[in-house]
Every structure is written in structure tokens, then in C-alpha cells.
Image 1 (cartoon, protein in one colour):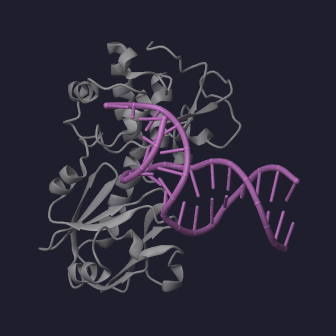
Image 2 (cartoon, protein in one colour):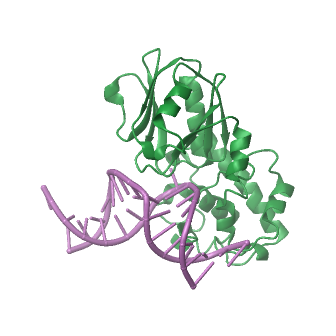
Amino acid sequence: MPELPDVEILRRYLDATSLHQSIEGVEVRSDRLLESLSAKKLQSAIKGRSFEETFRHGKFLFAHLDDNGWLVLHFGMSGYLKYFKQMDHDPSHDRLLIGFSNGYHLAYVSQRKLGSIGLTDEPGAFVKKKGLGPDALSPDMDFTAFKEALSGRRGSIKSALMNQEILAGIGNIYCDEILFQAGVFPKSDLTGLNEETMQRIFKKLKEVLQTAIDKKADPSHMPDTWLIPLRGTDRGCPRCGGDIATIKVSGRTAYYCPRCQGKAGE
DNA sequence: ACATTGACCTGAGAGC
DNA sequence: TGCTCTCAGGTCAATG
């Protein structure tokens, strides 16, 4: 789930459910998610406070605690948030459970425990320390900045787009979608991509991420010209009808259309 | 610098 | 039904 669009939807979910309510209970149900802090320290930082606003950078979600720093959530491969009242609606694999004074709860759920939970004084400092590039949807990440961030690099376009130090937020499936929409072979070497192709990739990058947010990051609502809904099915390419293929690129499975996504820079 | 591999975790689904 | 194998939308460290 959680790439940039998914995390943006989670951010809005937290905004819509959990702001300005006093936090009465904090249960840490898996220590392994905690980013260099103890359960006790997390509890004392959160208890009695409330979430006042949220911020997202790439795949990281920050929740501002009144007068006491920010809670930082990363969702790994399988994380999400759930707001509910009755404890029998508590999802399995809840790793952090926050109880509010109105009787509702917010659960951080993560089946595979590959995410992280931490604290920071300030999101900007956290981003810097992590070495994250600009958020992929930030207005600062314009075409000039995009080209600049990629200049002097080698390797495949797919690895570059997924490299969080270059720009933050793109993961495996949205990367595949961007390259499909741009008609670019995932393993294309960066150095061989011409200006026009780079421009197309950049345009599709913004378009795909924004559209995904508009569709609430729900794969079943994505446009039928997209590749995402075809994952795991045997349906053909939405553009040419041909078979969708997969290859490994930097350890991840890339879905692509061999006919529509040419090998060359063009 | 880059790619590749395995590790970290848990469970779903396929194939037998 | 139950076993085994593979795979999953993310990162990190070690190795070539």
C-alpha cells in the first residue's frame, strides 16, 4: 500500500478523525517498530496531548503533538491506520493503539512489521537526517529540479525514481505506472534518455501521483488506461492488448508492456 | 556508483 | 485438509 498517494490518503484520514482530541491511552503492541526509543518514552511523549496538525514528506507521515514535537509514522509494505470505537473492530496486527477521550481509538496496523514509529522535534530536521530528497509532488520539484537531481547518475530509470534520496515518495507500483504512461522501458539507462523523454516522464510522474490521490489511492478506482488494476490478473495491456510482462529491476518486480515501452530513450 | 542478494517480518494464495 | 513454496506497494547492509 503505502507509497506517496497512499500515505497522503492516510494523512487526510488522520486529519478527519483524530485531531484535537486528548490522548488517554497508548499501547505499544510491538517494540520492533519503535525507532530508537522505548515504549515508555513514546507513551510519556504522547499521553495527555493531542494531535494538532499533520504533514507528509514522501512516504513519511508526521503528526504534531501540541507543544511536544511530532510523531513520525512509516508504513513499510503493509501498514495503515484505522479509527474505530468498539474494541471488537480493532484490526489484527495492530502495533500501536491510541485511545482518545471520546472513546474512539486510532490503530497503527502493520502485518509485516516493516514500518517504523518514531518521534522528532521537527519534520524538516528528520527529513534531512534521513537524507530524503524533495517530496515528489512538491512544487519545488519542478522539471529543472528533477533533471538536476538525476544529473550525473547512472543506472536504470526505475531505480532512480524509486531512490528516496533523489526524490521521495515513489515506490514499486506507482513507478511502474509512471513508466507505463510515459512509454519507457523500466531498465532504460538514465544516461540514454533524451530531453523529450525526460519531460514525458516528469509530466506523467506528477499526473499519476496526483490522479492516484484524487482516486483515494484505491486501485479499483484507477483509470482503465492504467496498468495498476492489471497487477496479478491475466488481462492484456490497456493500450495495445498485448501481454504484460515482468522483469526484476533492482530487486523488485517491474510490470510493463514490451510493445508500448520501448527499450530505447525514445 | 551501481546492481544484486539476503535479511527483516507475516500471511495469502498456488500447487501438490 | 494440510503441507510447501513463492510472493507481497519498503528499506538496509553486505558483496561483486
